[in-house]
Length: 220
Image: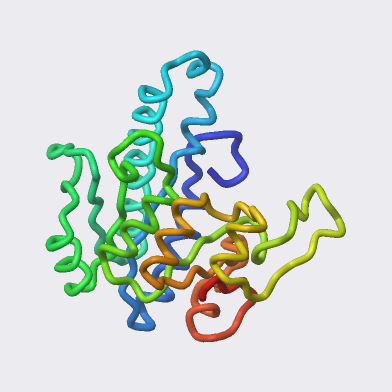
């Protein structure tokens, strides 16, 4: 959403697409999981009082809208991309199957996963961990507004401590909340390292993937 209060900002989408293009050019296979906060938070007043399951389904639809916007941005920046939804929407995008997603990656396409896990009560963090496990990903990268994991929100707590490396267990026992506990546990069970970095810095994704940059590594 860039600097907007909600919705989409084309410049912000193009910047994200540029970051992805940089790593695709390095030879990486890239799959993306998107959230829906830029849309659903803008509807928060309207959603107040709505049943949790219904609200979660609304949030899933918001992620598909974002996935379609991102697919458009990727194509605009010279990449082939496919949106795959956990909820069947044949007229809009493909329905997720592991076999088809792997095939897209093998053909050099970027895969954008929408609709979370397809189930209420699960976050897009958990969806990212689930897809990372299903796709046998080497790592799960989480782009945030800060340059790693801190002991507290550094925007609210000036003395917050930044960590270069943590174990999955430390993240859970210290309740650091960089991702929800289900997502962290799923990565731990499948031995998928989590890399938390700032997606606000141009070029940082490629830098992190080539061994540089600033980030927090979460592993065993």
